[in-house]
Amino acid sequence: MLKKYNLWQLLLISALSAIFVIYPDITWLPFELKWLGKEDKTGHIAFFLYRYTFFFGLIFILIRYNLNHLNTVLYKKRLGYSILISVVAYALYGAISLLVFTWVRHFGSLVLFQVLVVSVLSSLLGHIVMLYTEKRKKEKQIEDLTVKNLQSRYDALTNQINPHFFFNSLNGLTSLIRKKNDEVTLAYVDKLSDVFRYILQSDKKGLVTLEEELAFVDSFRYMMEVRFANKLDYNVNVDTGKLTSRLPVLSILPLLDNVVVHNIIDSDHKMTIDIYTNDKDELVISSPIYPKLTSPLTNGSGLKNLESRFLLLMDEHIKVEDNGNTFTVYLPLK
Image (cartoon, rainbow, N blue to C red):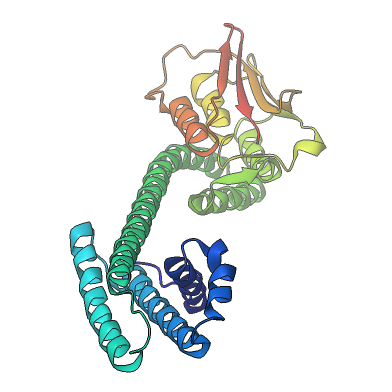
């Protein structure tokens, strides 16, 4: 459907176009007026106004019809309708001219040529505008489909996180219940509810502030410290000026979870996870490597998932360094 154009805009275009159709060499108009002084001035002025009104009306009708009412991709069909309207208008013009303005020259062949030119140009204008409108419509559809596709991909990636973390958290809760420490268990459940609330609301978010992610880390840290009885520690040292920086929601969780999944954490292998910002606008998560004797049952999708989400939402790559002793991931901030 073509855009409905403003009536006053079409009237102004028609008024200006009618002048140039009647007087293509408008600079000659003063000499025409001087010549009119030697003739029947009133009759010629009246006929001029009649011609001007005719072309003003014809141009207005053709442009409005082509822009607002005629919706076809075939230029020949559009031109045919315009010429049909113009022929009818020309017939009316000729009849009125012969009946009313009998004493002036009617410019019949010139007016016919001008009418045909107006038909062609009005049809061409409508065709170009329609093609442009259709092009913009298709671009918008492609853009909407792209956004929906990216959202679907992002949702799928985010949903991969939840089951993995869910089972690990239940294992920690089971361990506390067996120890029958009700106070710690209740505090653990409170923090677990905060963590899951954040995870469940993550599907409504794309990018979040670093401050929001660190608040989530604080709840997660309590759960892990309770679970591993002071054998796991978190050292957070983030520049407060970068707390408003943004990154994909749940960026830190898979990295902290991977530390637990892939490493031995006990009295002989105390784990300290460092979380800090550097001068390259990156959030760094670093931890020592204490590999388990048997490889954990994982498909290695955690880092791939995280990399995909950074590419989708920020068009940035994460960096991973593994020197055999320390595992470090650099997350770009926006």
